[in-house]
Length: 348
Ligand code: NAP
Image (cartoon, rainbow, N blue to C red):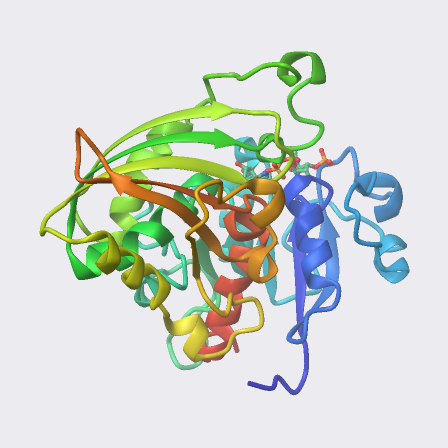
């Protein structure tokens, strides 16, 4: 699909870990153009290069580096705002922007479980985007519809999990899931966990994370799953690894499960969206894979890598998955959400 004129977009929380990933992925995007950057009052009024302390290995476009950071009042010169705001402030700021008619594409937890807000992974539940038609945030247009909307993506660990589960839910049904995570440091924001806490160490607690993993998949997959999650922080920079055991509703062989993963394609692939992975799931036969350092950038950082499928003594099957937490699990996933909205003519 070709977009005639790029759509102006802003980034809320542009200075943070997710915000910087938004800038990195949007600075050469074929459909979107960054026209506004916003963060807290600590950053507002400064040039982006000074406020952000750019820590990506990808060079920052000098034009963006010179942009002045705004505060998060809903008067930004753009149609869409991508939000990487701290959860302590995201709820109210995002509501304010939607009320003023902006399309808000958020990473934060605040609106995820609202009944009229899509919790979207376009490769898994693209149909949930229709929920925005029940929203009534923004000013009405002449046709009676409203222009302000909020769309969310899930917690970064949930994204990889639902990508792995979806083809199996469709083919065999799933009753129960037990998952243990090894989560990257970039998931804790910037500057994040202190080096003296994490080097030579594992931290077996991430506030609020297990509850999110145990509830968000039901809203995304639309099935009543029983999930038990253990979440741990480990000394990896990017890429969350998850060890998963599943109980299926119908019996399946290893070959059938691997085929379901390898052949899985969905709407973003059919529409050829710019941020979509060509192949959502990469299954590895090598028993030492997947590994974050080797596989997190597969398919632009948007794929879910899986390996080590084997029988489970407690449930039916167990496997290991890995996905990039700030790309697939945050900024890249949110950009894919916005691309789906553009392709479906939902952004005027
Ligand atoms: P972060 O690095 O701490 O960044 C937080 C951002 O929020 C900064 O830009 C900060 O601006 C801004 N902010 C803080 N207080 C503010 C205020 N009072 N008003 C306006 N802006 C304010 O956090 P992060 O890791 O990027 O996470 C951002 C959000 O995405 C969180 O809700 C998080 O749960 C979610 N998320 C993160 C990941 C991940 O892998 N990191 C994945 C999925 C979802 P200043 O620099 O000016 O303080």
